[in-house]
Image (cartoon, rainbow, N blue to C red):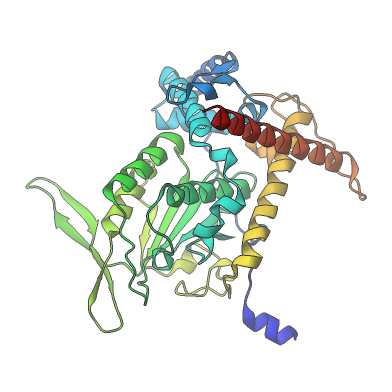
Length: 387
């Protein structure tokens, strides 16, 4: 039985990176950057109301979940993305909170997203050598027609990736496999959809990509004008078994990925390389990627396991946030358990052998989160009935 189980392959997400995976050290802030951060923190702490321009009924006081989202590292990500403009960062932070409300991001449920996930066309499994969670995109496993829910699926999974980030990690590793499907279904991305995804990534997920590892795509250098050369991805990323070219909107993915990457380094895109350089073999999917992790997608096993794991991590973070006084600008390192000292100097009480105080706090925080989501759902139902 044991041998049979091992042959079947892993079916659940991995909990943590390997012991020798080390986060990329964060650079120290300059005096000027410290001052800009302090100014932004002061601005954000003064916010009490969120205004939603498209759905005015969703305007209202800043919620506890939103206050907890406004971490020190979050503020710094927006500062870096705006080239350290305090006013622009504040504007974009409020815009993102408003977008999250109007988009309903925190209200997407596992059951709602489940039909999009049934074939495993997106996966969160394993961590790279810097502890970044790996998010696999498998366009060849497309199983649904173009709809808003397809985009909701993408950002639901990005949120789950952030849930999985260990202490000291702020970015993800995007793993894209352009291997064609034998069913030859259409996996084209409409331009309008690509633009929407691009807009959301640029404006609401700044500084979140650590690496993009891409396989089964063909790439060429094309002359875009008399004075500029650029790398593009061929629209024919692979060939079918009979040798005929299979069309893919690969360049669309490339155009989406490129603005997602901060311009500090060009070393984040890796094409058709030995990916074991970037992901430990034991945490790299064996299928097509050359790793040693024999992973088999089973929706009935993987989907509840991923969501349960992420829910526990969110509740644990919220418990630590509440224990330290519910501070805007709290440290993500503290929230993730990398340190027991909050930005205010508060020290979190470590769990005792039988569970202890922090387990109780975690359950209370989880109950409050669930209650907040339930209340939001009820308010939406009342509004819908009234309409």
